[in-house]
Amino acid sequence: MLNWRDPRNPLAGGAERVTHAYLRGLVQRGHEVTWFANEFDGGDPAEVVDGIDVIRGGGKFTAWMAARKWHATQKPFDLVIDQHHGIPWYAPIWCTDKCVAYIHEVLGPIWKAFYPWPLSRIGSWQEGLTLRQYRDVPFWTASTYTRDLLHEQGIDSVTQIPYGVDTRALETLPEKELDEPLQLITVSRLAPNKQVDHAIAALWSLLGEHEVEAKLKIVGQGQEEPALRRLVAELKVEEHVEFCGPLPEAEKDAALRDAHFLLHTSLREGWGLNVIEANALGTPAIVYPTPGLVESTLHRQTGLVTDEESPTALAAMIADVQCHDGAYQDWRIAARNRAKEFHWDQVLPAACDQLEAWANGDEMDWDDDDDESDIDDDDE
Image 1 (cartoon, rainbow, N blue to C red):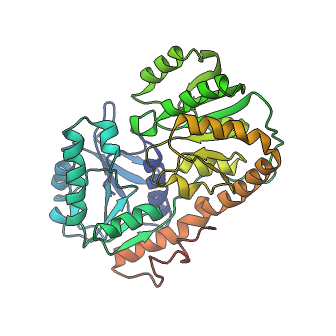
Image 2: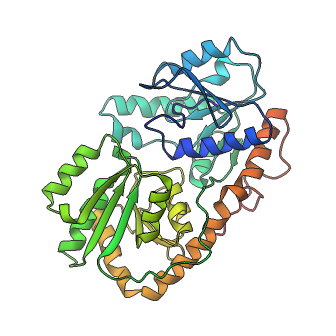
């Protein structure tokens, strides 16, 4: 696995959690697995994590060269997975082993969220060029939107494998009425593309314009935290916002279970793992109508999708849900039931079968573009 972050990287997020799970599943089947990742301050050059050999070298723009140099000293691999996050590892160019490309999302507009012009334009241009260069490489993604976008880029072989979650769905849902103050939560890296500031602005609108009492917990850390704290102070909502930082899994689950809604206002997502985690604990999500999130949240079935990507629309939708307490309870049950299908126990066997098939040079006997396939089976 070639991926810029490994599980011990302080900036590791959802992509690393699912990557870790897939690789851990392969280790449990008796395979030898190596994860090559970027260096980070305090990280050892090599260590073993859950049976996975983690090797670190290079930085954001040089790690692929370090990987190439390291790979040249190793015996051949049965499969090399080149994970894309805007910038690939170019493995099909420098390695003769069988390669597949793993991508969560085509970044597109996300380049503008992280970089000013002209860097954003250059990044977007090279991403499109790269995808065209990879058109003969099998791709693997979780999102229907990303799959279709890759097809539009001329890539024929795209296999859709869903993400899994470790969170087990509750057998019995605790009572939770839509009483004020509404308990809202966001769980994500505090990065520009996550747009957590929209959730804060929606809370301000909810308290003022809609006169609805609410609290917001912000779980996560990242470069945007100072700016988000300034926004909270400017809007004078300090008493209603709690910055929790990164929480241990048990504490994060407790916070999700206690919330009325998870808010997800990301510019674009490969899927939205925390939506399913919240759902498993009986908490619906209210999300923006963006790629990935409209797949993880089924509108008015397992949660709500706003009409537009704005704090105003988000606040209006939150304020309106109090008129639909009965529907809210139905969403909780449907969300919990659907989340059961995405536990790793359900996802991992077929995912590992596919990775083994690629390593063996075999083809799976199901159609990778068929939404009714064994792997790509959601209850739409």
